[in-house]
Length: 602
Image (cartoon, rainbow, N blue to C red):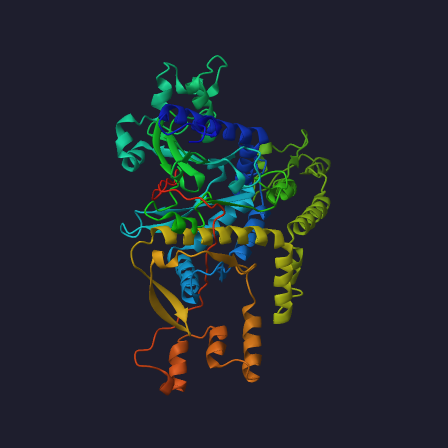
């Protein structure tokens, strides 16, 4: 038996100590984020993305405009990075398994990606990455999906609700612990953990036990240094409400801590892959669950469990928009473009202010003109000055017209924004005076855009690759019943059963770099027509590249003898996938199915 003092968490036989220690880790994670200013930076980026660059109430007569180029840049980047479904490849690792198994892995990954709407989840992750600089995903097996049959689910984790320990760690898989935390309603928590339903307390009720108001504790007066005072400060930080009531009267903070525990028994490791998952509520006074690696089916023998990708890995994946060599959290384009965006908004507001002044200029009315101020209105009428000299004194107030200077500065800021964001060439290509219409030129622009986004493509491709590998690991562990999947074969839809036990072989899944980027459809069609005329491809390949409707019916009419009765329906091309072997050589006998999604309650 290994020494428990060398482990990050105490033993499961002391739940009070376990909960307190998990809360200590959570507090360290939140305080480190506050020290780095991540919460303030991320909140500012979110506000700028929503075109809320002006703080405070608007003053009468002072316009506060904004042309949100940050939103345009982010949406354009997200659309380019998620334009197509990824293309997976699976290769053999070791002698186990035949080609049919690896083909089934590819088809299963492609079917799952389409059936479970993974492209939409990927888009949300990329939006998080482009806004905050960090995209985090968690892949779990949810036994409640598909009418109780269970299915693998991808959770796009909010960076605000995620952390690693030690806080200076640069790789999730190298961390000692990974934490996922968020408020959860008491009703939902009671349904998920019925054995703890009577012990659950709301966040506000827990703080009220001290006899002080919640706001006083959350503000922290320096004299309360106990557990509840620390919890109040932590809730204030997470809720981001300086004067609000945090999570409310009917919610509690739930933290899921995935930790490496190297405790050994006579039969091997106590936790499969040395992974342990502890879930606490509130300030750690209540441990909701403490279980071995939930990604591993406890019914598997050690040899089969070790073939799973998640045997010794946390089910989390992280990708940065811009890589920061000294920080796990990376950086986003907003940090480089925010100041220019603010200056552009100021220029637009100044131009609007000058426009309003020109539309409503003041009138100089001499005191001896003999005309009352009330006579000057927008309605038709006659005014009678006392003399010709007095009439010449009535005029509009002239003011300095420097709008041309403002327009020149605005053009400089706009050009700098285009250059820094990397969209200058694309904008010039779309200009109405020099439009790009040749398919070769369009393809060259797409390649140039891919070159500018090479770092992002590399990072997000890794995120997709990790998601695919984690899916196959869950499939190998939890697809205990027969599942039927559909796939494209010879331009038609085919179906086949998939068994998790038949796919428990080491394999390596990769993603074709840039496969999610847009492609020139015009170029593909022109090339397909040229290759067909040369005899390099047949009619089926040509119709697929042309994306022709009812391809199977057209081919059947042209070659009726080659078509069997009741031919299959056509289907668009689908991506494929695979898996990867684990890193450790020891396996445990205990495990669990399912996991907590503290953020969205899944």
